[in-house]
Amino acid sequence: MKTKKVSIFVLILVMVSTLLLPVETSAKTISEFETEVANYTRQLEEKQARIAKNDEEVAEIKKKIAAIEEKIEAAENEIRELQNEIDESNKEIEKKTEESKRIMEYYQVSNGENAYLEYAFGAKTITDMIYRLSVVEQLTDYNRQVMQELDELIKRNEQKQAELSSKKQELRKMEEELEAEKERINADSRSVRETMPALEDQIRAAKNNVSYYKSLGCGATEDIQQCQYRVNQSTGGSIPSTNGFFRPIQYGYLTQGYSGYGGHLGIDMSSSNKSIDVYPIASGQVWKVYYDVYGALCVKIRHNYNGSYIYSTYCHFRAFGSIREGEIISPYTKIGVMGSTGWSTGPHVHLEITTCDWHSGGGCTWATYQRSSINPTRLVNFPGSWNNR
Image 1 (cartoon, rainbow, N blue to C red):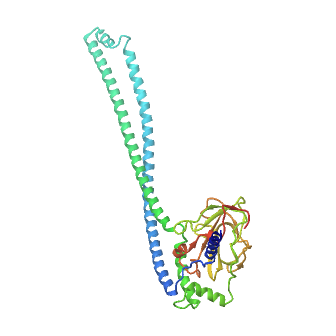
Image 2: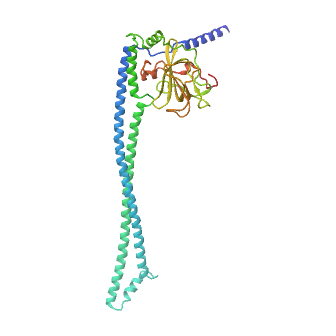
């Protein structure tokens, strides 16, 4: 029994010590960070060039599609004109058929073709007989010619209609192939842009980060995060240490979990109250109040945790709270109202926790920012659902 109690005590001690361990940060010197920023900037510029090339190709494809659509419209007009011709031809066919029928009815009797013979041999003189034979011949020739013309007209119309239909199908196929190519290129551009801030913003922030740390007077081999922390403490701009962590909303439930780098960098939560107030997970300094690249309203807060900075990010607000950048806030300061702005399928709060930030003064690039994310459930207790903070 005593052994069991000791084991439980050791387990609890390990769990507590794990929670008290400082969160791992992306430590680097100014020199290392400069190298990273230079390499990262080059990569971003390559992505910009790739997107620009894709945009040019898409613009060219759009021109081709427009030209094809003009041809399709011309083919459809031609088909409509042909249909009018066919309608007129059908009227002509009906007219000639009726004409032929009336002639045959006039000269034929119920016993069939013998009427021609009776008519021919009923002549009283040789001249009359020759005349009558000529009439019979002309009638049969006329009927044969009418039927031949009708047959040729029908075949010609059917052939032309088939050709136009085939041409239209061919144009449609070309258009579909171009649309597919356009979508492939756009998808490639989206893969570069997706789930990341604007490339221009990243390049600007990365360069500003270097300038910022140089302006602080950090040593060449000094950890830039620790340098910033030291300078802030010495200048009276310190952030109060966190005293425990809280859930961002009073009551709610989790809707999506954390999957880390390359996936979902945070957790999502919602509530039966779709406009519930949102609060920070701990005391800290309002670091950024901004719109992300998709138009989501976001707030980022810097916290003093175990002698280092960590950042919590909240997104998709319907509206911001009455806060301003640089302000020191408590866990009870309203920072926003839950909403569904930006890339969202419904009202919820997205919460990310990272050990650095890609904005100026945050100490990392966007690529490093993603790798610095930690599962919020490591710091905040999130059951499946809750009714208190």
